[in-house]
Image 1 (spheres, helix red, strand yellow):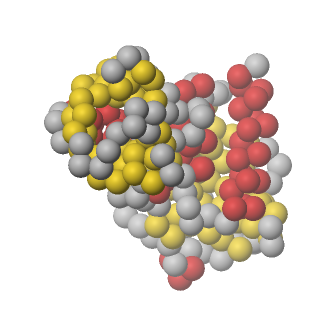
Image 2: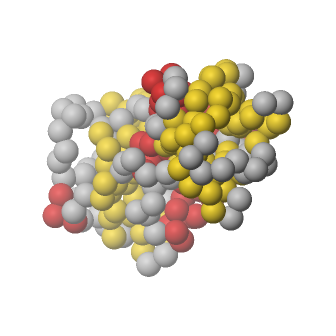
Image 3: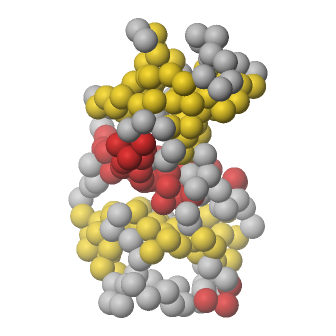
Length: 219
């Protein structure tokens, strides 16, 4: 698993003694953070990780320090910390695990060139584009869907026969809903943002289209 870089909207921090320290990145058995206490390579420290309102006591072994950033391995309470990371960062993990499906498995689309990124039937991103312009998309995260047909956006839950089998991409069925919860909207953003295989211009436009719809739901 690759490192998950911490953004300003992530609610995670590290307490070293009484001092709060910014977390830079996490993995299931590692963490990096700003060296605010003059730590040294080879040292071990007992610290507290805070995720949302949950606290986890862990023991760290300092592996390296570069540009005042500590890279440390989690030793004590590693299983608890791993659960913290995999639960809270599930959207990022799923997004980073998306694999691009070959064009041979993707139907030609009249809307434009198709792109398909897949983890499983509940976590995937499919879209079409003409050059840099997004013409349609179907995005599923944890079974929730958001679709764009070039004009408007609809949301709902995914419903597809034989959904566990990868096949040539077609139109998925969606049980349309009125709106998604704010938490689900935020997770969708994080899921899409974490897919490193999508062209940056395409990702930016997809997120912009979704943001316009979500702003209405948040109002």
